[in-house]
Amino acid sequence: MRLTLETWTDLSKRLFLSADASYGSAFQEYWELTRIGYRLGNVFAVGLEGGILGNQEYDAGRGGGFVRGTFKALEATLSGGFTGDYLLSEPSGYVALNLYRSF
Image 1 (tube, rainbow, N blue to C red):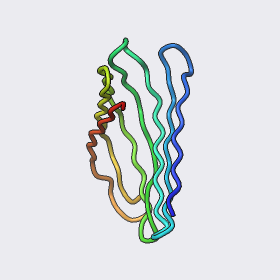
Image 2 (image 1 turned 30 degrees about the vertical axis):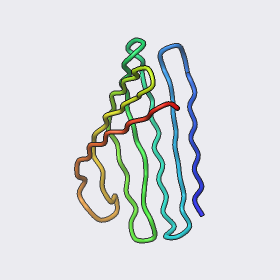
Image 3 (image 1 turned 90 degrees about the vertical axis):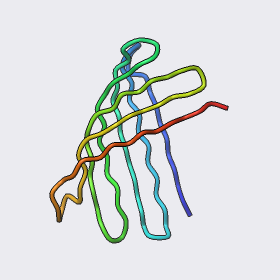
């Protein structure tokens, strides 16, 4: 079984908040990411992100920043920062590219 929740709210004309989370019962895996962003105009936004992820064998956190571009039917988000198992190891870097397409 997998449960997923995605939320988004505009805090003002330029400021937004999003939170996404999922849980899977097979290995008790979980993932959560919250972003607060600022729209620079109609196309680009920048902001901060933070979240947690893990399963029955590890727990990790992550924090960093993102840049988002919205182009007609395509949205691209490039993010990066630090991640790591906050109980056992030193943090390392991460980079992620997410592409979304409207249908």
